[in-house]
Length: 338
Image (tube, rainbow, N blue to C red; front, top):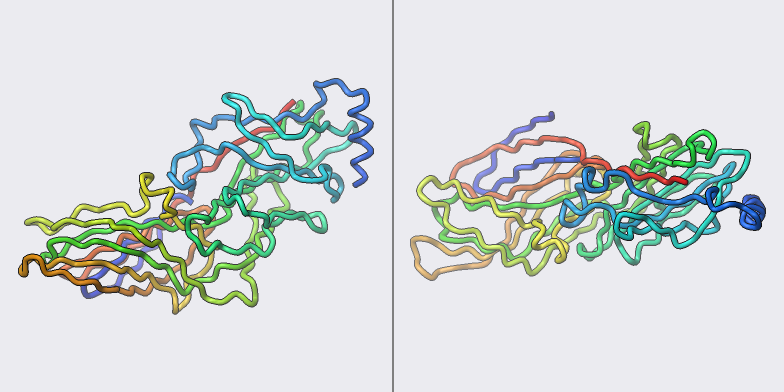
């Protein structure tokens, strides 16, 4: 656990991270007279028990993914195969077969953005190449990946186990009115700015089953960008006699489809990184009096892949401290079997 503390006058952030080819000839030969038990079939293990913690509602399990395979550095499939859930079974868009005399390396990925097309294989390595975080927060995607290295039907009894990992950091928000000054605070928008949104993620050479991770490289020409959650209308009531207001989720499941969860490239937040909150405040001592304002709070620290960072935006009457806690996302297991 990392802990940092400093004082702010009236507005605070509490951050909690939870988490975090030549093979074509072989395919034709096998298809000609191969028995069906030599086909590579897809299934998912323990989907209900091991859920992705970083989908938009933070609980939904993986329902589809794409998978490719490498055969001695070349692609074994001409294009990645789509695999999707059909009840308790998994179905692939194409059928292909195990080679008879060698192992394959499988690379799989999940990209929930319908316009996502950054996955590529070049020089025997898989990556999310030249990835750009969508400006529209609702289009941002939880990029997940899995690698199973050197797997053959003989050594695995026809089964290929995949453990998916999250390549991005997730950013979510909650808010509190702890101030005796305000009868209510209506949050209109939240902006995250001064961060990089372009880079390339190279998949690991080892298996994710064994804990291998890939690596992000921020694009050299990447400029600072901002991402905004608009039209929120999240209202914080009066804080009561104790002035310990209710913590209200801005990124809850009920608001998930509005794109209130962000997926950011892991990075060290620079000196220009900030969160800006636009709100409408109603004063207690002046009934009916309200005004709109923008509060800008600098942020710092490092975002890591596979970790969730929840920023609690709190209006306070006295200075407070800033604490950081870090934990990993749960991973998702899948298998490819005969």
